[in-house]
Amino acid sequence: MSDGQQIPGRKDAGDYEWCNRYGSARDADGREIINAEDMFYLGNVVPHSTGGISNTFRYKRLTLSIYLDYALGHSIYNYMKTRMIQNTIGQSNSAIASYVYDCWKYPGDTNAKYARYFPNDGDYGNANWGRASDFNVEKADYLCLRDVSLYYDLPERWVRKLHMKKLTVGITCNTIAYWTGVTGAINPETGMGATSSSGHYTSVSTANSSSDSRPNIFPPTSKFLFNLKVTF
Image (cartoon, rainbow, N blue to C red):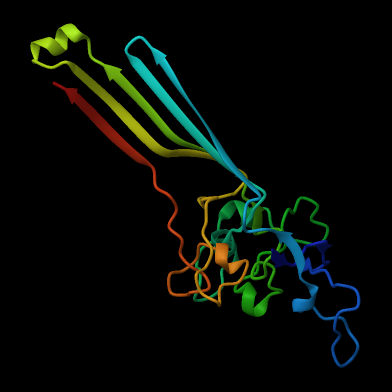
């Protein structure tokens, strides 16, 4: 189970207004404060369903095999998305322009999709982007075109001239494409942290390689293999 803070609305200043759980702690003056007690469930890091489907098609000398797999019911903390818009000094010096253009700009800005963009938001702003929220926690359901193989058996009259019984050429492709709601270049297949310090959210982030709690998980790579099968 993963916990995170929800975003019910915005303040007039353009910041996200963090939801305060009823009956949680208050400060010395009796004012409500946002702390760990005010965390809400945003998703599970483990899919509740996984599976796949495969089929093979044959036509004359051609053979085509296709395999797809899927995972449903899990969420991912898109840490790259957080860093690219958080712009915290020492962490990121760039931002995704499309997000910034859609940020709150002035009172009454009805076209804004996100809270205001503030330099070094984690230290001097309202931590709009530094906290886990439904902005950076995304549903990671996916369908993957995992394997595609295409083979062709050369005509026997050609093969006999080479003193062979059979000659098959082909190509196999692996992890070709994903259909998913995860934004950016983040892969929907992620692992979990291997250390005790890895929390629910940080365990699924793809962040820097220097922190055990935020492992830099290398996504599956696409592979293309050429095949030649000879039978004497």
